Image (cartoon, one colour):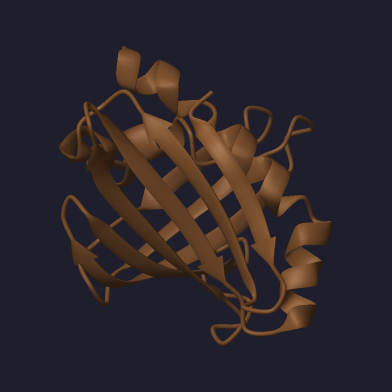
Length: 161
């Protein structure tokens, strides 16, 4: 499993998950840039993701849903804020309706991805910053830390293949 640690910081309203991959930074970037690769790890194993729109150009949107074991779908949206391939990505992430549009465009977490070479491996840090303690607690209560850890745990097999 590539996850080194997950940390919730209630003072700074963040959840940070750090992983280390047997891949180059360019290969790690493709895990974010290519929607078909992103689908293979974005959701936990029992909630795979499907991206029906994906664009990492700043100002562009991505739309996806995760399908649960019972067939139910949880929809989400991203708006890309900034990118510096292959090292840095910032996007807003929130819940969407069945049509893919945000339930509340002002209710989101800001996700910052940092990708850096560490020897012959790559360290990838995914930090979500929440807008309030209530929002942080809600997402932690929904299992976000465990879900992201499980999701990122699927990456080793993907980069090895």
